[in-house]
Image (cartoon, rainbow, N blue to C red):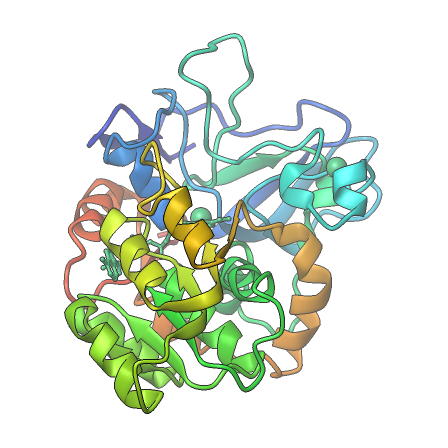
Length: 356
Ligand SMILES: NC(=O)c1ccc[n+]([C@@H]2O[C@H](COP(=O)([O-])OP(=O)(O)OC[C@H]3O[C@@H](n4cnc5c(N)ncnc54)[C@H](O)[C@@H]3O)[C@@H](O)[C@H]2O)c1
Ligand SMILES: [Zn+2]
Ligand SMILES: [Zn+2]
């Protein structure tokens, strides 16, 4: 089959000789990929910030059609249109039952292999014509016909992730909230914060076009340098915010999010930490009584609530606001990674269409 392959930092190659994904275990399903997302998380190995095994197909966001199932699969059938959350999960272990599917005892991250333990299994990812999904019954979610492929792709990662970032801050209704970093995750956090009643939502990013996208989702926006002044202006004084989301993943972005908080405020770090430490000290957090939340979003657990909200229009994210490039051929993958990593103006998120 055709697929992209991670060949070390800065190197994504398009190949047409990758063995086609097949059912390997009785609880597997194979999905023919209709759309596969390119996520900010794919940039960490690409930029050399995070280790990953060479030779693995990257990508952890997929919408597609089930084309084969193992003998033990009961909850999906060949022909179903499904979305694939970015980690697999069994639905039955203690973590899954507590709503923490991202930490399923048997779960795996799609599109990643440990470079330091070559004996450990790697799971090929979604930027391919076909994808093997272990634990299919616990992992896959059928897409209601009201939700198109592009909107469904946002439900595989970015929208539940943005939602998780806000929800774990506690009730935000009627409260101001800042989102630092307006990539796809930050934009979805803006949409989630608005849906959960935060007011105003202040989106911060150095990239002008991404600020315009956040404004379309109902945010006030600022450049990083102007953010503290803007918060003072909006709140009628130097009062700082009760809550902020770090969706940037840079030291500067995290420092800004902390600077905007008032004593007793809460920081939600939804960006994947790739530095060795926080951009603030424990002393600073202590002295200002800050609460800090972080961790991988439990997408599969959240989908039980979020799919109905999106289906019924109660959580509306115009998919084109986030996915600016929804039909890129896999053959253009190396170029798409390069342009995305460079934050090229007008390109916020790419979706690959392997049929093209
Ligand atoms: N926790 C999870 O489960 C989870 C899931 C998906 C993605 N992520 C992570 O979320 C992060 C965001 O993902 P994305 O796809 O939106 O990435 P992205 O790279 O497209 O977006 C990051 C944004 O942050 C902005 N930024 C950088 N420095 C800044 C600063 N100092 N102030 C304000 N903005 C700044 C950039 O301009 C960019 O728009 C990544 O770290 C990704 O790995 C986490
Ligand atoms: Zn992701
Ligand atoms: Zn589990």
